[in-house]
Length: 134
Image 1: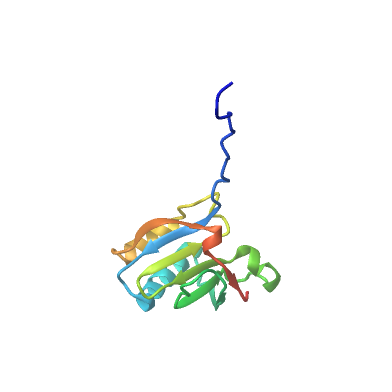
Image 2: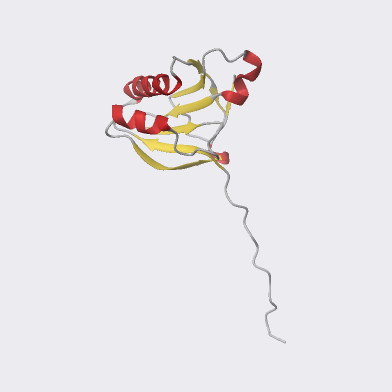
């Protein structure tokens, strides 16, 4: 019998990713203009942009928005909303309800065409994001 027993390797659960992280040199206001134009292009009409409250970890973003397609009833908003959080240093989190199925929606390409400095820098973990107020 070996001196040290055969211990089962403890399995860590796979992280749950809910969105993508981006970085841009455009600044918060210009990034919002570019994102709004790309989202409108993808959806075919301008969605509602609602300010929501950040409940995720520090640091708190400068701007946090819920994006709801035009015509979605209030009772369905929380299920259909996408979210965009923007920090002053150019970091952005984009969280979409269908991220697990489609991690790279056409929106990303449309957004990058408007902002040549926009780069994807990773995935948003479920423990890195939190909002309330929709």
